[in-house]
Amino acid sequence: MNSGIPSLNIPATPIDDDRSEATPSDGLRAVLDNLDALVYVSDFETYDLLYMNAYGRRVWGAIQGRKCWEVLQNNDGPCAFCTNHLLIDAEGLARAPHVWEFQNTIDQHWYQCRDQAIPWTDGRLVRLEIAMDITDRKEMELALKEAHEQARAAALEDHLTGLHNRRAFFEFGNQLLKQSRRHKSPLAIIMFDLDHFKHINDNHGHEAGDEVLRQIGKILGSKVRESDIAARIGGEEFAILLSETETDEAQEMADRLLNLMRETPVCFRDAPIGSTASFGVSSLRPGEKSLESLLARADEAMYESKSSGRNRVRVKA
Ligand SMILES: Nc1nc2c(ncn2[C@@H]2O[C@H](COP(=O)(O)OP(=O)(O)OP(=O)(O)O)[C@@H](O)[C@H]2O)c(=O)[nH]1
Image (cartoon, rainbow, N blue to C red; front, side, top):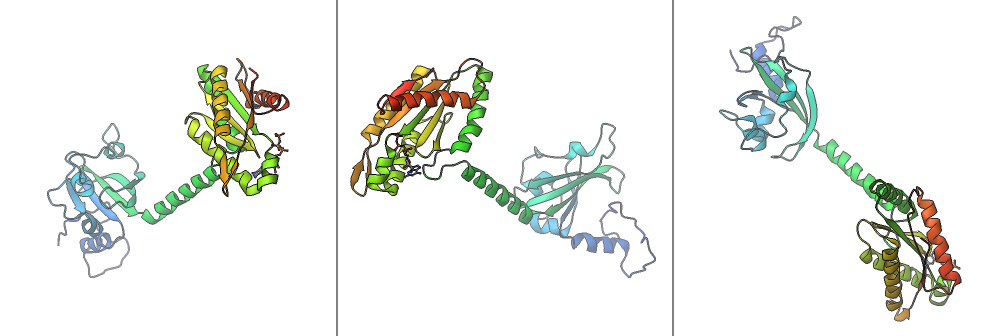
């Protein structure tokens, strides 16, 4: 009996002496239709589906007179990601199988596909794909990747203010510095430290102090551009790296921030808490390679602000 299922390179006669009742093609049909994987064959030129096992027909339906891209992807033409060209070399000979992972557009499941050019019953080379559902593994992998990304984001975030923490400031700041040097574009820094913050904690409690820090986080979050890096680098010490920014522009921004802080007292348990800060501004010098030295200059400027009465901005270019 001819089952219509080609040999798929499996010897037509049993290798051992096991003489079962079933004919080889019946046996082959039983094997292919009970596989927990998609097996299909299509023509390289016309994309006509020549064979699909029961697993495939169950998920994607009948194949008679239909193309692989029509049945498997619901496309209007050959898929952009078709691997046919990888399966045959320039001489038209079969290459080694190509193994890849892919999310099917119809059932949304992930498959590991093993594609191969094989000789068909009439001698021409055709495409054979064996695809195993790996959705569970893939979802686990994606969940792990997401958890990893979340953990990394958490490790770089200052939990109180939502700004970057000190580690992130240096990690992203060094990238920004390299970028500025490469493009020969200006890079400025603003650093500030809250004034007499200990008094706020002592007079209103630590929670009130935390609320003041959160408020600063909000102000900075709303004022810096996406290309800038705003961070809490110490207890009540903040730094902002401003890309494409000259020293005088950074000074103007520091003045605006100082005014905003003065004008926006934090309301904690119905009591307004005013805060000010001492600012230091600096910018990258030609040939300067280190973020630490830039930060150190801003720090010096900031301590000049402190020593000359606080609540002001000082620049050290
Ligand atoms: N509420 C709160 N307080 C903090 C936090 N981190 C640091 N501090 C407090 O910030 C205060 C800093 O005190 P000092 O270094 O003496 O500085 P200061 O009182 O701001 O005085 P000047 O900087 O000289 O103006 C300390 O009392 C710390 O406990 C925090 O996350 N939350």
